[in-house]
Image (cartoon, rainbow, N blue to C red; front, side, top):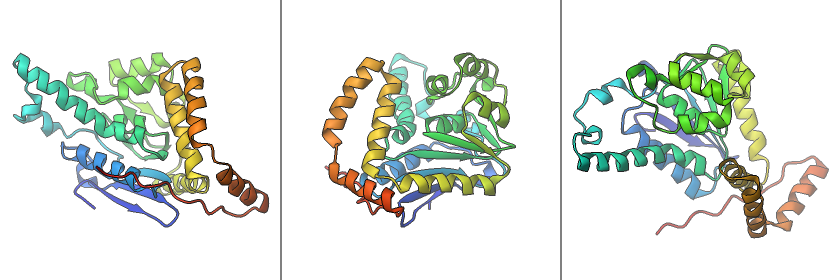
Amino acid sequence: MNEFFSLATDAQGISHLSLNRPERMNTMSPPFFPALRDAVRGLHDAGRTRALVISSTGKHFSAGMALDTFATDDAMLDTRSARSRLSFQDSLRRLMDCFTALDEARFPVLGAIQGGCIGGALDLAAVCDMRYCTADAFFCVQEINIGMAADLGVLQRLQHLMPAGLARELAYTGERLGAERALACGLVNAVLPDADALLAHVMGLARSIADKSPLAVATSKLALNHARDHSTAAALAQMSLLQSAVFDTAEMGQAISAWKSKRPADFEPLNPVAGL
């Protein structure tokens, strides 16, 4: 556990990261981002995680970036000269990379969102593979309300998750998108009555994913991400190379045998990623 979230992995390989600053509406100050990145990449490298659930505590999922971040004299925010602006670009790319770690993880990431999902929290939700929320949840591109364009990925990802016109409406107005409309437009997969029901539902889905071959799940995520960002022809070409690299008849035999006998399969975890 650290200042911002707790993280645990159970015997089935389900990791659960829970934001734990409800007294501050789970706001994200600068140290949050590398802590999240390092935690997710640690799970990726270890190879034992089969699904990651991200949830929170308190009334709201997160109110996004702590506003006092913008009131500091942090060198990262200095754009007064050409040299400082060049450094600003690198700093921002590194900040973006903290959320990209979730996109690049070898396992699906499931977001369980209650109450407000505001500003940077929507950037975090948008990078999850799937999102689920409570009936009182709402989503807001808050950055436009404080005089800036959102810059951690939500503008780039939201248009893949809902109609482009609605994504632009949220980006330009800063208005709230409620749970039912989020479900109707495809931003979330399901709406649950409260936080307890939400977490139970998402954990059940994570268990279902964890029962499958981690090799097949990781391959599917690689293929889905590539197809999202490339043409169909390029994605099919990539799929032929990807499948030739990971096709495993022994893994398939184990899965088929378990399916026929209606028992869980005992798949090996992914290999750890060797450090330099």
